[in-house]
Image (tube, rainbow, N blue to C red; front, side, top):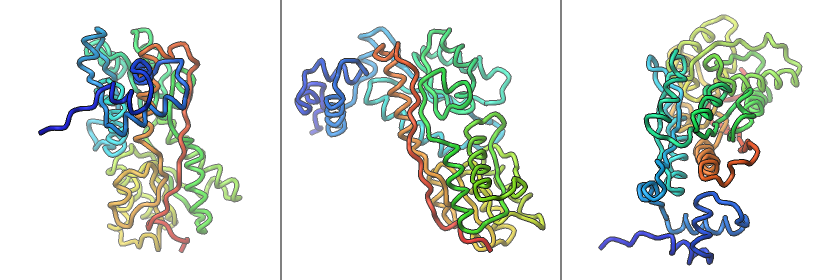
Length: 347
């Protein structure tokens, strides 16, 4: 025998509210006290209740589909752990709210990248779009989506984009500062920084945090070498090798994401360097790869799944009309430096 699937009435009974109140909470509606809203969501999670998006779509005459736009480079390996964590968080929230999620990779350097994003709305009938960097920083793209009648939520927006739509992320500058301070406290004075693609403002803010930490420690800007990667494992290998083969190689290598840090580890091993005895290496994101490489990476944890969920919640509120006229809101989530085996006191 199969267990009976929970219904909206089961949620109402467990949370001790009316059926209409449950419906209002699931749709992001107004006029619900925060304690009641939280009680309903606790019941939803406890019962593993899921809205049927197809049935809701037929009833409302709308697609109830949201799109997650992920930057990609078809000539290189994708930053898969980052993308999959965002997608998983967004998918979980879509299932709870009765939306469907469509993840679409778009090459960030493609001349027709804007057309590709807009086609997701027109062809797939998406009511809302979640933009990840660097698309989340593109103010004109955000306005184009609105002109087409769509709603927008942003993951880790920077620049002008941050003030044009609901967004969620961490304080990237503070994250870069904190991981750099960890290395400075270990006695490191020669640094390398492998940045991300041009125009990726979150990575640039991480570098700004590094520079602030250097200034606070009385270290000159010349104490850090900077290389441009593209967030892939391969670019981490290439850029780290160039730095580590120099006579004045850095004793600490800071990477703007975990995939590049894993590549840097590979290069250091290939060069016969002891990690962290001769060089310390750090990443950013705290994706699963940071724990499966050797030695495990010290990194900055950002709650990627929570970010995906929060973006869907914000977008669902705009689509349903519950928060359509509310001011744009940026939700800042906490980050944390995770110290593992790839960092040690400077040699």
